[in-house]
Image 1 (cartoon, rainbow over the protein chains, first blue to last red):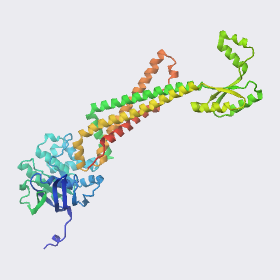
Image 2: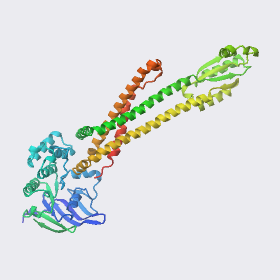
Image 3: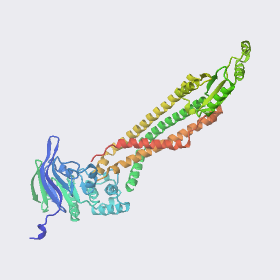
Image 4: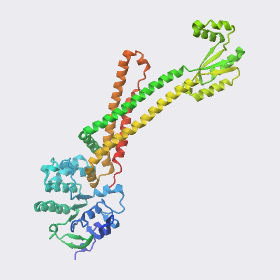
Length: 231
Length: 294
């Protein structure tokens, strides 16, 4: 046995007995799992089971009602309001509804993530152009998002999430509105991002995305983790 | 610094993009500040007239009939050494009679029937401008009246009181109007920035999720409010300058002495007005953006 398997890896995301309710409705109950640093993992389950809420807990848009949650070393439950932006700068998010700024060009949509990081304009230009090449949209730099197809818009969102080189990347139903070809392109992008060292967690109800990948998959059912397998 | 540059760019883009709403806001602020500064000008001028009137105000101290020359001199010395009194004028019995005759004009011969001069010698005292308050003057008159050799002290008590009340009402009205207009400017900017904030709510939510700090989100709105206030103030200043120039030039055609009478505002006021606009607008913008929660 290789010695390296005996050494515990750093846990990038760790849920311990986490519960979340919306008023009387239980959304997540006693969730316990972890994702190691540098992993690419999936969370799956039917619609409305709490996948989006689980991701929201990770980027602190929601707080756990019970349990312990750490992300990249940050304790989410006790995180102060003024510290949240600094956590989010380490977490790239690919939103289900894209959240693109339609009054800004593709370039500016991506650059805003770096402006938030207070980066120099020259560096911003270089990094945005580089990431645009990665998502194969360099020729659409000056286009406004409403002139892009769904797949292209999704690639802009991924570019925006990865441009600041986050330690964790979260994707909420990233292929929900895409055809099979575009879905494949998007999933390949996540693998590339993961290969560069970013921990990636994809929430999806589409089981074909993780079948045969050999990656960790967590099944959510009845607001709990039903099973944890390898895809 | 880069955040500031980004905030400036965003603020200017919004100023241009929402130019009509911004134009109306700037115009409202200009008119508000013009009304306020016009009222301040009127108050200053009325106050100046009241002060000029007050300068002619004096206390008349009538001396006892049988007072000796030495005693009169002692009283005069006392008045001259009193730091509250800026002018002492001695009026002899004969001078008083002569002045009365001049006043009576054609009716002056009736005084001849009286025979002996019935008028007492007196002092006319002028007090320092800042002491011309009814209560202070009353106290001073009382103190002088207690002096040996003084028969009576007379002064225009009601006149002084009316002048004082008029001046106080003008100043109070200016203060009230000033506070009202400051609050109005805060509300005008508050409403405008609140509209912009709601229009950009989606964008702000996205910025928050991307890790933007409160300063990063707030700054463009505060800068936009600042520019609205400054521009409103500058236009208000220019309008005030134009109006006052027009009044003095055109007014001089009908009333040539207007230039000598009218007090113009000091140059600093024209700088102060945009500063007031800016401060009130930034306060309005700050409240409009409110507390940012993640």
